[in-house]
Length: 320
Image (cartoon, rainbow, N blue to C red):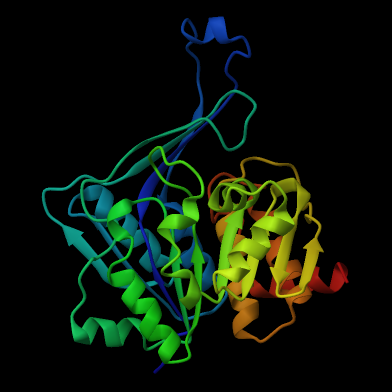
């Protein structure tokens, strides 16, 4: 059976700390107080694959986790959501990556601090049999490509080249380097971009990828590198999709009070990917994705308030 989607990328633990801290910076060092805390799995790629599975798609994830309780928590969380985790490798004597979101000072996304994993972000070698398993799919996606230098130019590039040869639809969510890197960031991606159908990024990432100021210039620069569609996620300002000679702007769809925005972009990616598999026009994909993203920000974490396919379809009809 051919998979709907294969996703490669890093998995980690997110620790979400939500409460009310002092607004005055001088008072923070003296403050102590209660907060709501929740541990979720499994970072950007984890939220993405969970959302894809909740949409009813067969999804396989390829990644690495630590061979300890945190790694087990990640695997079990994804398995419970219906994700095929047979491609996740447990690495002994390693530490999991942990993202800590301290949502105590009005922001619903930052500040963030993190512990880097001591294992590879995802496997950097695949056997011929593993390549066949990964590419027995209709759609290949990579999340967090720019996070780690050691994934650039290697096996991931080769997978995307082969996917292109086989006619598999591909996408990448670039995200951002977890280290200091001067723009244009796309210097790290120029070799893979010709094999990417859809590139996802946010507005800041688009500007830093290209070192251009205007989104239209960012888009043209990236389209000239070989991608077919650029999806720029703009938070409360919605999203803008660019393809050769065209662009479409989708306003944000407000579904309730903002609790945190963690995972909203991953939900958007998942739903845009779903719409692509259905051969929907760009405007329908963008609305579908925006509705789901708007729902995810109404609860803590990346997937708790992700709506069902039926719920999204009902809201689609309401928003027509």
